[in-house]
Amino acid sequence: MKKFNILVVDDDYASRLMLKKALEQQENYSVTLCSNGTDALNLLKENKYDLLLTDLIMQGISGIDLIEQARELESDNMATILLTGHASLETAVQAVRLGASDYLLKPINLEELQIRINRAFERVELERRLYEAERKLTYNATIATTNHEINQPLTVIISAIDMVKMELQKMNVNNQRLTNYLQLMTKSSMRIANILKKLREITHPKIQDVPLGMKMIEIQEDRKPPTRPEDNKYILVIEDEENLRQILQTVLSEEQYKVILAETAHEGVDLYAADKHLIELVVLDFNLPDADGLRVLHKLQAIDPNVKVLLTSGFDVDESIQEALNRGALEFIRKPFNRIQILECVKKIYAYHPTS
Image 1 (cartoon, rainbow, N blue to C red):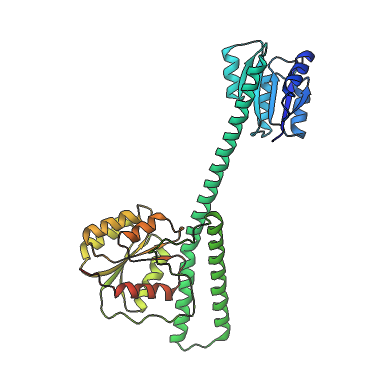
Image 2 (cartoon, helix red, strand yellow; image 1 turned 180 degrees about the horizontal axis):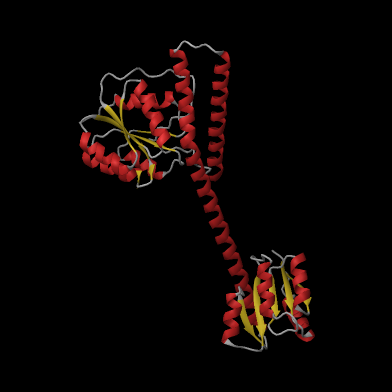
């Protein structure tokens, strides 16, 4: 059974003793007595109490002032009840405004006091749970946003490293120092990606339980690039991150894919509507500023039910992405991804032909 520490503040000796005797009938109450507000504040600075039970009219610091100064000590998890024989609506309103959990008139009905104390503890516990839930939601949202914001440039870095390696090969440059630097950059990028993955697993323990039908492509190196496309149809890339749009265009163009770029969902849908007969594949960032991926997918499918869509996202895998796959998106690739991964994924979807 939890032990509750109660601080009783009253300048009337008889009232203090009566309250102590009545409260300590409860085995889980530990009561400390104090005769004035100054001594009470010193006790509050040095000790943790679950309840402050204070008289309103006292010499020096009044009950109202005591409650206000107690709140400034960040005693958010402490309930406060004001006791007074000088009742007024104004006093009651002021006490509640300053954070008092309740207000009770003298002479005190001990049964009523116990009811008020239980109610005050329940309120504090509820507020604590709400605060913890809000704090957890804020923390998880911060982690999710941080993941997304880091995964965007990380994808650019990983793909750019691959492009530099390819350019060096084209120029027949065999410089071991450059190779070592690039390998160091790759390892560091992969380390960042793994740290982000661990953070996701901490905030969302079930995030790796990939739903049935979702095709995840993990970050891997040492895989051979796909062969070049056999036709010259276009790939539409809808991505709000400028650097990532440019690196995707470079990676795909190097493999002879023709690329159209769109920065927003609105622009991407308009381009697809105008040139759907030329566009073989849409690479769609699932989290665009002007529309979510499900809405964009719906609009693309309204134009052509057989549209081929590859989803990308730096956020956690969630039910909305699974829903998009269930509705007809062909594949999902999590950011950060490298050049080989995106090309293999594009090649697989590029060759896909839906049955009639």
